[in-house]
Image (tube, rainbow, N blue to C red; front, side, top):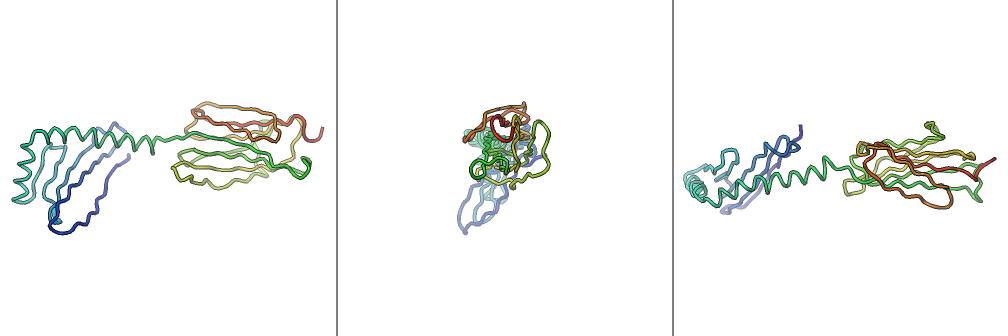
Length: 230
């Protein structure tokens, strides 16, 4: 169960009128069928009238406010507008909120780079970096495989870091000595992915970029064909 609730803390000076719009839904992901729309009119720091979409009219809370509520309820154009606003104001914005937060997946960008030792001495060991950007939600799993076997040692990863736009990034590192014909794979598992994706490229002094979505896991494979001991 998810709740969209606007908490109102309003401070106003005396002898002023303030109108507040308030949308509330217990299950907004269910097309907002239970959406309730309130329009509150505050006068002199006290609630004067309130429109409640569940009853479809204004209610007054003092003698002069009851007269205001009756006046509003007799304005046919205003009553039509309030009924329409349940959809145009509340449900519309609830759909935007759900799409941009609860249902947001993001697009992956996976980059692998090889950090060589001086003079390209692969036998001395190298560091392979796998960087993943732009995913949401935060939960993600990044692992390394050598010829299809998961690596559990000589692996280090950063914490998942926020990009500031509701997406995240993570960097994982594998320290190893390449072997000829060996295949090293960076694998990413995330709930927004639906089908495996593979990409292979000969490793030279290049950075390989892959952007994809809609797959259950993401693989980036690197073949070592002409490097390392024979």
